[in-house]
Length: 586
Image (cartoon, rainbow, N blue to C red; front, side, top):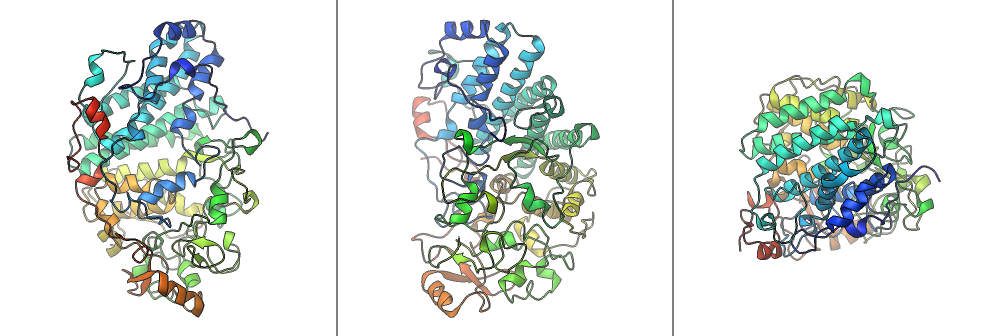
């Protein structure tokens, strides 16, 4: 076995789980008390273990047929799957039921917190596992607030007849206040990662990272959706990120074998225990039936996916350090070939996207031109920009669930981006050389961001409303976030918190089909099966991925409706005190 995998036992959970506080029987209180009255350290750990796979998704559950965290970007303008994502098109309808409204994880957390003190173990050890449970309660609520906005706050086990079963939704202001209290207690009780030596176990470091993440989300969401309290949360995000940047935590950016390989190598590792960048990871090992499918799904191409042209165009020119709309370089501002378009850009581009040019950065293409969806032979991509991130040639097999790659859940790069963005929004020092420029230095991108960057018209169109004191700097930090965290599932939440949902309505385009990359036969097939639309930068026709293949391909993001999902109607039927989100009323 390559490492120790957290195995998730079931002995406890006959009594410790329920699916929904509104329609399931409660915990057996006597059994729970009996369990905790004799619970050893191992028993407390087993209880916690059950929540790890439920709330830390990583590359997906072992045995799952999917791409894991990559799929989070399907809802955004980053990745365009072959079958159009209904959320990205804002064509999802009011839900009758929604698994994201389930409360079983929260119930398990509350049961632990109600009874764990009865364990005969030491206070220090009990507090350590209670800290893990508090982390998971915060994570569960963070997911719910992002999706639904206001939700009921429950901090105790509910029994039949309890009035709180039928309470109205609490405001996100109350929920967030309680989340901050929970995470601060977790930070106090949890040991550091250095003390545990386990990157796959919740630590004080992971709790600080979660606090930085949800406080940045909430601070910017409130700022750009005109809700009070934005500055307070941005300040907490700035401080939590700053705490993790202190030398005593020991974090640094992973440098790999060379700047030209470091970024790609970061995401194809089978064990992050010795990686200085990863704060928390999810482990996989097919040797114990815990493999994943991510490299296999990228390489086989049965379900084609690809990066959008809009995402590709955010990577800066390496020659000038300018946006490609302003650099004037042949192949960038003026399209020539696909290879020339991808060359001489921020080095993260060729470590994220596969190029057809033979050489070090072909990854799964092996020097071939990209296949377009299911229409052409060879490796498949829905857009012509195949995914290289998370693809490990040595890890590839056509057999399912044999992937050994672990998944970074929190990494130091995100912490640096949080520090930079919160600082810029607050008018504080974003510490660019320690944050954004450190990320660029890691890959050998020598053009540094300054506090007075040149205005990029593309970014102005992407982010028209900036409320912080330095608009162009904030836009450039948002660019950096998109590039560094590409395909890790952050983009949709970012667009929602910045109130930039209308960005989902832009044309969903792929590559420009040039003569040097695609044969006349290829182009004829594409002409027959796919549409074209002019690009914003070159004004040349690029693949319009969905127009000819979908009966209703027009994206339709509506403000403010689509910033939140609907409350499932079956829950409103059970609890008439629940109100529907704006725009979703029947």
